[in-house]
Image 1 (spheres, rainbow, N blue to C red):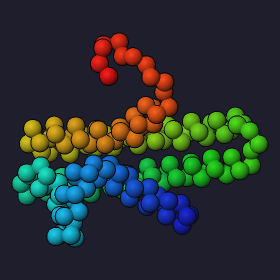
Image 2 (cartoon, one colour):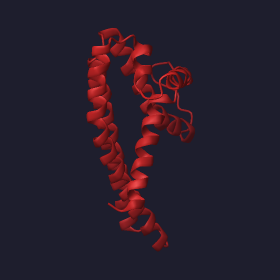
Image 3 (cartoon, rainbow, N blue to C red):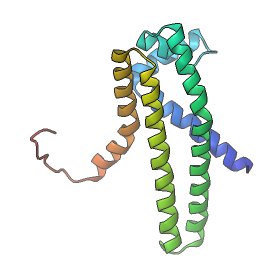
Image 4 (cartoon, rainbow, N blue to C red):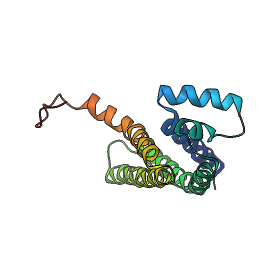
Length: 166
């Protein structure tokens, strides 16, 4: 693999993990305190936050370690598609059919990556006690979908909701 793309893939995976797991101020504070007290275990915060047993954490760690290579693979695919798009944009004087195709390709890769991430979160939530799993999944969904929703809200005109709630 091209060293530049490998670097992008690693950066993408790291940013994705950090952004999804630690974008809430509450979780950041807890994670930071836990990270400094136990710098060799990046999932210990999860055990403490959700009151997990060591065996539950071991199962989640197994799921996490199984998912990371897939996450890196998707990030590498996205980075490669973005690099191709950027190269095409540098050559193009307008939005050519090829540029449009590459934009769609990047969007499709991101969507598939997000679907797989949501599937992973669901699987992790099932390895927890039911109430904690629901709370974990709700938080991960909120964090995962928040960036997209913020962009939509910022760009969309104010539209009243049919059901009478914001």
